[in-house]
Length: 100
Image 1 (cartoon, rainbow, N blue to C red):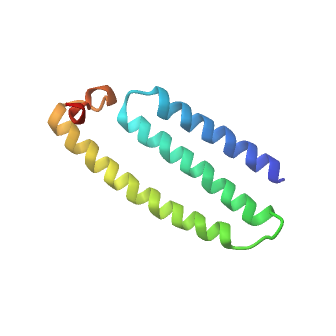
Image 2: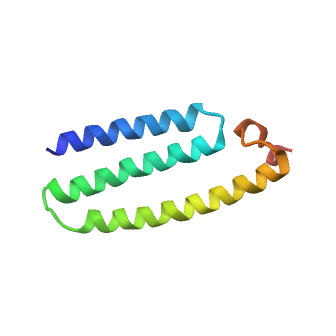
């Protein structure tokens, strides 16, 4: 049962990594990062349930990861809104103000 959860998590992580590296829309990049974090959460819960020493440690780390992800989304969306007001677009290629 554990290998099927790990395979699903690997597929989700690869989809998220592909989206984060290839898409130009900043909202899609944030969604892809969230998908990767959810794949990690799935791994943590699967190892907590089916690992060598089943315990609640993986589930506790999962709750911590979910709370960090929620804070990351709030900050990311706030930055995106500010950049959209400044530039008028959410394309990641256009956000090069720090380069100069």
